[in-house]
Image (cartoon, rainbow, N blue to C red; front, side, top):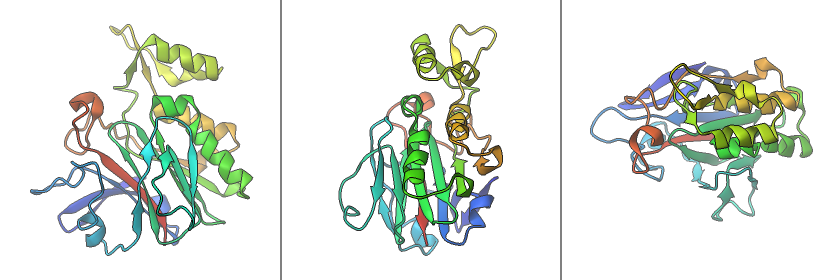
Length: 247
C-alpha cells in the first residue's frame, strides 16, 4: 500500500511493502506544501527532498522515448546520458529516476539478487510491452519469477484516461485480451484505458502472481492537490519523479 511520508515540510509517497526490503530505497514525489514546489521542474533538485532524507546517492535520469527500450546501468555507463523507458541495475549508490505527469511509473525488484528497475509506461510504452521487456531482461540475467516484485506508482486512472479508437485498435493488434484493458462509459463515444491493468497483464503473462504486484488507487488527473497532470494542465505542467536505488 502507498503511504504518505513527511520529511520536514517535504512529502512523498512510499510503498510499505518495499520499505520492508532493507536493500531498497524508493519514493514517488508529489506536489509540495510550502513556498517551493519540488516537482515543478524538469530535473530533480538534489538539495531538497533527498537532502532532507540524508540521501547521498547519485540520481541517474533517463531521456524517455515512449517506447520499450530498457537499459542496464553499470559502472561503465553510469555517467553517460541514457535513453529509453526503463532502467535496471545491480549497482549500489545510484538512484534510478523516471519522471511522469500521467504516465505510469513502475518499480521492479528482484528480492533475492538485489536488482532494481524503474519503468515509464504511457500508452505507447504499454503497447510496446515495456513491463514485459524489463521482466524478460531480468529473467535472462538470472532472476527467477518467484523473486520479483512489481509496484505501480501514481498515474492517470481508468476514470480519466479517455483514448481514441486508434489506440484501441493498436492494442487489439498486439494483445488478444486487450478488450479487458478498456472501459466504456455512458455518454462517451471513446473508451477509457486502464494502464495499470494492461501492465499488470504483461507481468502476469510472464508468470508473476497477483500477490507479487502492488497497486494504488491514485489518479493524477483527478487529484490536482497532489499531482501534476499533462491531461489536465498541458505540456507546461510540472513533473513527478519515481526514484529507486540499492542501499
